[in-house]
Image (tube, rainbow, N blue to C red; front, side, top):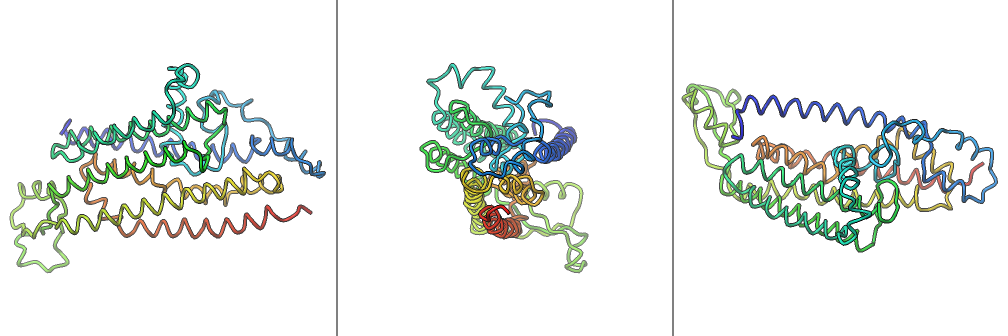
Length: 373
């Protein structure tokens, strides 16, 4: 252990509570910002629009500018330039790593002065960090695995930084996916390599330190089956064995079972990644890119509570969120417990998110394509 478990528990609990409160706070203010202030992309559409419904456009334009009322500079404020992708990026990346990337960029002058450092070079650098982190994940020492978690968080920060630098050099405001560009594919490939490295590290650790299954009771033979408590980790068994007798050990979890559980969890991340990128692309096409669609209807859709809720689901079930939660499980030495808990149930959340998104896409398409009356 890097520090006493009680101290680590208190610090981690306080940190998690603070992050959850902060993210809820930011989500609330993001929704209020979208509803009550102008949205950049729709303002540009209104200015370039050839439609003659000037009264409706004027009603849209009377909203104040958010930049005029916020005291946090828009260069580091994640609420200033809301976009489709910004509404679907996970909370940690959007509200913590995003502003931190902007601060680092401003402090080091990466976008303006360090032109030799390209976004693709940053992407390749976090692949190297992922390899080192994956190696540390295989270690039996918990302290080294926690170092690995920190390294994978650095990898995810750099994954944000490469996108931030690319947008700054192209003068793009807010989070956007430029589907089909070289940077898009390089970033996706490097992300894939990083995720594979992490899952291989977790797999090798569980292979070398397989979780055990046992039952505690005094004595086991005298208790009915439903009163026995299953033990799923080596750490739990060791702790229980020091204070209780009568533990009946079963066989260690087989490597085949480990592969099955990790495979199902990895499948969730693959499906989540495919669906997440698909809906970012579709929503961007309907609401941001197709300026020939009715601008008022597009803005009305973007500002709606239903759209905010639907995109908010993808904040929770996107692949980055999976990695953050897995990192937390590794840090707490509950890797197997977490993987076993979600390897089936996680698919339910994906089905709900996909079903709601498909329904919403069809409704948005029919709504924005309908001529204004």
